Length: 478
Ligand SMILES: Cc1cc2nc3c(=O)[nH]c(=O)nc-3n(C[C@H](O)[C@H](O)[C@H](O)COP(=O)(O)OP(=O)(O)OC[C@H]3O[C@@H](n4cnc5c(N)ncnc54)[C@H](O)[C@@H]3O)c2cc1C
Ligand SMILES: *[C@@H]1O[C@H](CO)[C@@H](O)[C@H](O)[C@H]1NC(C)=O
Ligand SMILES: *[C@@H]1O[C@H](CO)[C@@H](O)[C@H](O)[C@H]1NC(C)=O
Ligand SMILES: *[C@@H]1O[C@H](CO)[C@@H](O)[C@H](O)[C@H]1NC(C)=O
Ligand SMILES: *[C@@H]1O[C@H](CO)[C@@H](O)[C@H](O)[C@H]1NC(C)=O
Ligand SMILES: *[C@@H]1O[C@H](CO)[C@@H](O)[C@H](O)[C@H]1NC(C)=O
Ligand SMILES: *[C@@H]1O[C@H](CO)[C@@H](O)[C@H](O)[C@H]1NC(C)=O
Ligand SMILES: *[C@@H]1O[C@H](CO)[C@@H](O)[C@H](O)[C@H]1NC(C)=O
Image 1 (cartoon, rainbow, N blue to C red):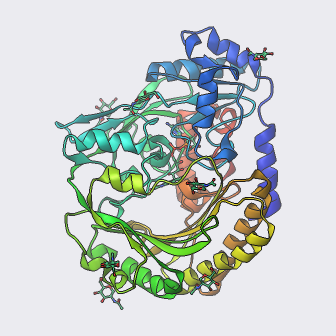
Image 2: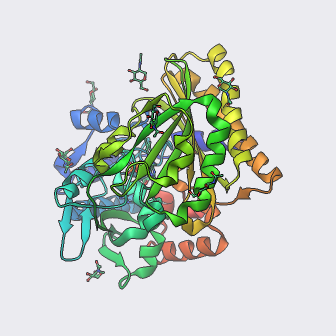
Image 3: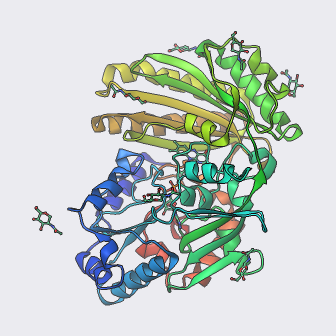
């Protein structure tokens, strides 16, 4: 990855668009007229403020907020037709708005299709599925399903959105048991570029159903996701923090945990090295969850041996555990990710690199409130024994964007180089954690990319979701 390419990509995001007001006018001349909002409206302001990260609060020319799949179809058809007459009705698709990639879930200039109102969750006991609107946040999904004694695989932070997480893969507390969240999708309802509303599932449009499991916004606008449900009552888990001198022990405990995860798929672990500037604390903060009602399961034995400084482990609901893992909104953010083979040396190296940034940051940055979080987690067993690495940094002052972006990309490159030296590199880049300039779709491998390209051409022959929806990770640019 070249830093210059990233900066170029960011400036392209700012320039794309073209003539736009006719596009909003076209929408206003349809039955959607009362759902199209210009920059002076309260709805527009609220929609922009509801993006998790400051960095993606672009100002679209207008925002359209559909209430139904038919509304989405109307909006897509209108924008595609308006585009035929006057080029450049570019648009973005937004569900929960948690992606930190500028231009992926919003656009300037252009139209943002905000799916926030498509947020219902309906449980069907007859089929053991839940039909969920892509604009839902996981907190509402979990609380509605809990009333029926059931749950689904989904986000581990309750304010994250459904649409992006599921179409990008989805790691969850249940990953070792059920795979990625997208593996539990029974059916996607999707609006295609020509306005058709179709179902993609095992028996109907199966190629599209598979492509949507990780293919993100390259095929259409997903308007409903049907997930498998399972019985789930309270279980055990919480957040345990340790002094950072335990990091070497944490790294070997994590490696052993990942090696044995298939033997006990109820256990879920996230290890985070977290420097918090306003408190000046550098802690290892772990999320330990065991999705059965068993306290202190053996899977975490090596972690009980280290003395902790705080511990919230308890029996509780999925909803409460995911509330606990929410991260504060309204910051500037950097998410960058890699995977590598399960190797404690790479983990320790990545931890040391973050520690090395702290003094530098104290000397340079304007933000008083910032968090440097390096996150390690096992990736689901189907990928083998792979560690998922995430740089998750947040800061309050925009003036520090250059500092943190520069350091973040450099750290990532050094971790990659370390993994290569140790022959522990792995090609997979997780789309939902990837930053600008990273290429997760290419990392799926050549055969998968060829198939994704074929499916995109089949369902979107004119490439609407490649060029008219320019944001996010594009097959045509992979
Ligand atoms: C605090 C925090 C915690 C997180 N925890 C987890 C976790 O536990 N597990 C995990 O796997 N990930 C996690 N993530 C990452 C998360 O999966 C991504 O940020 C994801 O994009 C969020 O989904 P969203 O609906 O909010 O996305 P948005 O930002 O709305 O969209 C992201 C991308 O998906 C596309 N998209 C969204 N909806 C649709 C749709 N209906 N049809 C077509 N394309 C669509 C958008 O165009 C955009 O490119 C977390 C992120 C944060 C910030
Ligand atoms: C928004 O408000 C500004 C100033 O009040 C006004 O000039 C502009 O025409 C308004 N825009 C729209 C689209 O209503
Ligand atoms: C869906 O969104 C609407 C509008 O934001 C909100 O009032 C409602 O409570 C949400 N419903 C659920 C189930 O979250
Ligand atoms: C699959 O799609 C077909 C065609 O729309 C539909 O009849 C069927 O019910 C769908 N299956 C599931 C499991 O949703
Ligand atoms: C703990 O953090 C400090 C900086 O806060 C760092 O200097 C030290 O090397 C870290 N210890 C370990 C074992 O990583
Ligand atoms: C590794 O994990 C297994 C399974 O949890 C455990 O039995 C074993 O004692 C652990 N080994 C070490 C060195 O911690
Ligand atoms: C955290 O430390 C306390 C006090 O030593 C101990 O009782 C508790 O078991 C520890 N928690 C975990 C999860 O190891
Ligand atoms: C600093 O950020 C935390 C969230 O990480 C927030 O709770 C706190 O209010 C912020 N403090 C200031 C002074 O902004």
